[in-house]
Length: 190
Image 1 (tube, one colour):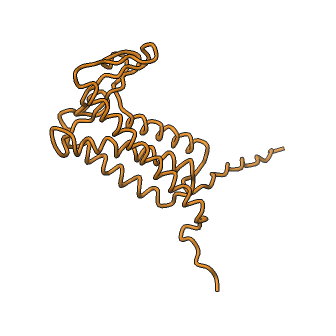
Image 2: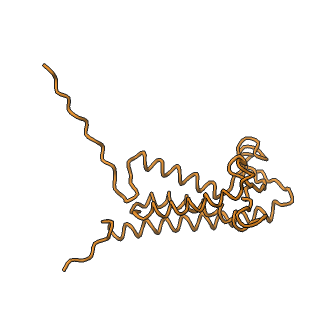
Image 3: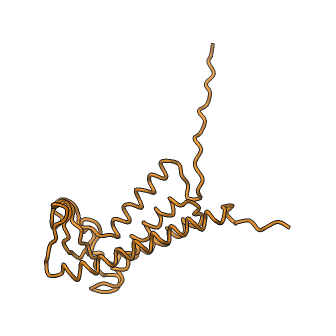
């Protein structure tokens, strides 16, 4: 009698490691994001601005009803719906997950999406219209040189960059690699 095979043909240990990395990355991203947002609201709500690393980073609280650069601030209800779609898409794409690096990339993206979704659902002014807490300003205060962001945004960015690098290097989500196609041999006409 033969043992039942993994439906996707992936070794169970590899799948388990990849899913563990995904889950840990997502939970750590969400936890760190929400903790930092809590501290930012608690300590920076009075307009306090904190300068770090000689002015490379400023902690400066703002509440963002839009997306990056406050784009779409009049359509706040759209962003949680998009985030829910992203989360569903991530989970659907992860069904064949068998790669630890892909688990990390997807976990960071998932954690970032959920971190900001939590704000959209549970922060003022209300469900589906909550404003995202942003508090990190690079190279100057008040988004002088770069949009103010948060830990969830950083997780999203790092996860997307890692996913792009994995794609470029031919690494698939299931843990296999894309083989380079052999160059056709050209026959001389002599």
